[in-house]
Amino acid sequence: MPRPAPPRPSAKSDLYGPTPGQPLPTSVPTEASLHQVVAGLGAADQAAFGQIMESLTAHLGSQEAARLWLVTPFSDFKSTPLQAILAGEAASVLALLESRWGPGAVHA
Image (cartoon, rainbow, N blue to C red):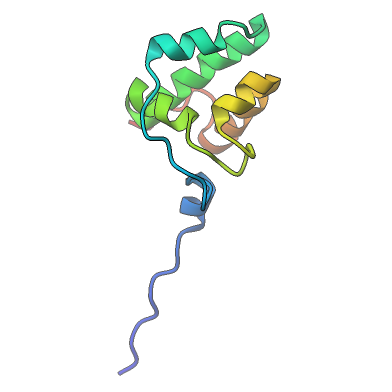
């Protein structure tokens, strides 16, 4: 009897996972340190950042998980999402999340 083929990796896991070969974060930034880092953003980027945090918290289930996601390297950003946000790409990060999860999506 032929053996079943081994399961293929899900395209979804590739799409949502960290960039292969990049070091993973060793700690989660605190809420205070994160807000200090983004304090210099313009009003539009700060608004987008707030929406990003709300979406991540709702989707991932906690603020700590949301903060960890922000500092995990992803190939979509060629760095971490937080670095992309600080480089003025907060709207792009938000658009990417909304394209995957929908605006204001709650999955918990």
